[in-house]
Image (cartoon, rainbow, N blue to C red):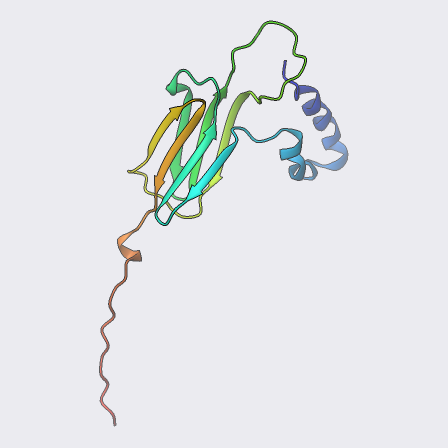
Length: 144
């Protein structure tokens, strides 16, 4: 049972009245973003911690990095299927989350680990050759 299904149906019916763009500002309220993340920054590194409970198969989560964007895709499934839901606060289901990063990161130096329901993604700042300091030679002009 998806507790947000009725809300989604209700939203779809009202789209015709208000227009689809009206609802964009309420998306986080109607259905909170999953997975929940924390993002930490040092001078040259980023650490993204995502809450993904119940992940048993690491192949069920996809991580993509493109310049200054981190994308997480997968499914949160806590595995409870019997009984009637009385209260449901642990968000579940398929997710696709794009996270804008504060700076470009290297695609060749990424480490992802999973422990106790948390996915840790370590990223390193992209420092290209063109962004390094280059000494500029000063040319002396003769006076006329």
